[in-house]
Length: 206
Image (cartoon, rainbow, N blue to C red; front, side):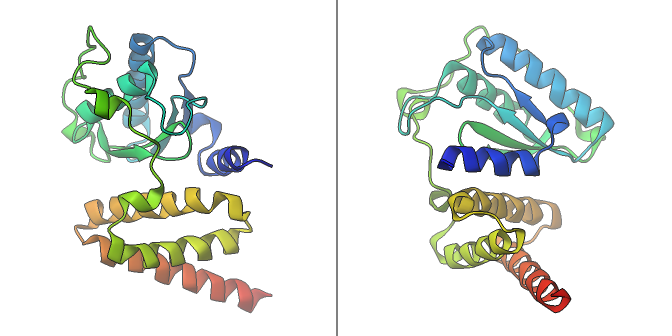
């Protein structure tokens, strides 16, 4: 199985169909409107839920971001701090989103732009898909790697999804730091300690 297929399989395990929205094939404005309505719906029914937006699967590594991804990233940046607590790239062509936990913080809906590429320079529009380690402060990479490797081993996942698991661990650490008002290292070490406990519990059961 190819790496991108492994990543998508892992993605589907983490995000069931009701929490994934595929926007490929839409126009930028339509994709933006659909994403906004979908996020608003979940914010009303399931505050604090984690969602996945699929924006582009076919982009070559290092290629320019397509108009759908550009439009959705701009929307999420506008919603952050209101309907959205945080968002980040997840696997290839997808964006992980944490809906706001407190509905009272909702601001008015983000406007639909006339130009979905507005505000994007050639540099930001052409961003390469970064390896997850590029996002993690260098001193914290060993802790994040260890936590991700323990999780991958415990869940019986193939080596091919290591980068996806690492990104997931880092997203969780940032979310915990934001929610619990702790630093990134404390959040990562808490995840590592939890994975170590789970590994020991699994061995004890065997």
